[in-house]
Length: 254
Image 1 (cartoon, one colour):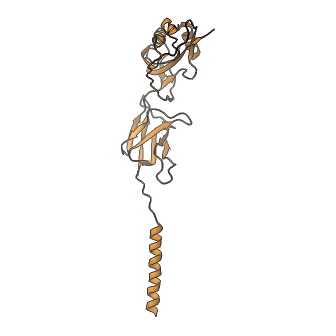
Image 2 (tube, helix red, strand yellow):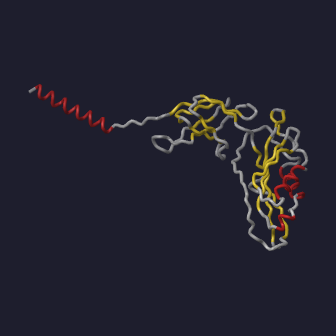
Image 3 (cartoon, helix red, strand yellow):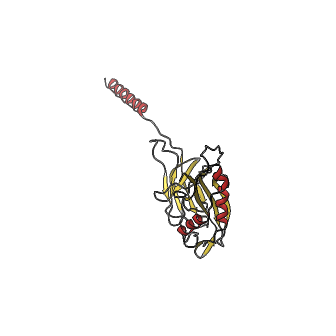
């Protein structure tokens, strides 16, 4: 009788254990702890920079591993993914471009490229002229280069003599609507990238957005004739900085 009771209890425990085993499930996380340092183009640590994995948490499919840099530029992301892509931002600003792709390293040193000064892409300088010819629908092949612009903290960015408003006034007073563009009813926004050298001169002009018919070159020519800027300064030393400027060409009927 005792043996029968013993085997019955053993059978019940075995069944309960098997049932528990069937209900259990294991979530395996293929992750690493990634740590390292982030520096700017001058080799100085970037502090309070937010880093975020672009891959979602494998269990809940909504959380992303993230971290902040400290005063030395050091960071550690616990639970980063193998072959993961990291993106960066300050506070609630837009994410910095380009992103960083980690090929399963556990320690990295990242140097972010220099800041680009976006002069006025949200409010471009306008050049207007009375329309001389009936409007037509032009057929243009426009190659557009798009990119997000984020910001680095610097001691003193490059600036035109008198400031940004003076620079925009300089453009307004010197830009001329090309006659070829007027004849062809060419309208649109031109965006030019340029480099402010250590001596304040503007070089390396690149067309980021263009409409042709002499408009792109007109903006470059006016930029080339610009007075020298005050170069970017960090701890008393000047360094090269990149900027962009936007000009909107539009024709009016009056």
